[in-house]
Length: 90
Image 1 (cartoon, rainbow, N blue to C red):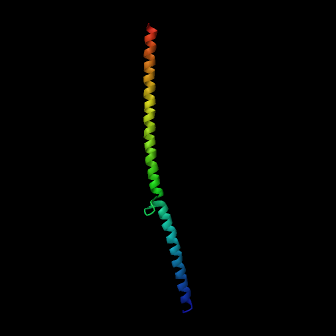
Image 2: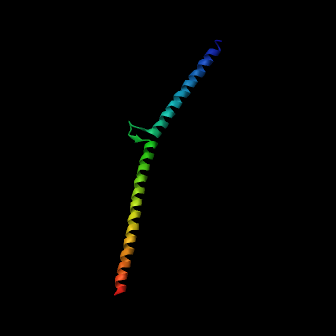
Image 3: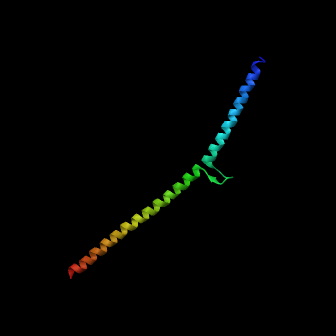
């Protein structure tokens, strides 16, 4: 049993080393996803939220511009027909 004991302890220390390596990798992965406040970097989640807010803002501007173009087209058509009728009736 004494022969097995050092082998057992070696496998535990290997397991501990593997867990420490995994911990470092998981910490780096977490910093990428959530960001690092100490370094002031944004994570993927924050960047996606910012991009979604920008897309909504751009969509709102696009919809406003489309409304302006439609309204101006209607007004131009109305005035064009009015001017046409005025000159046609003379």
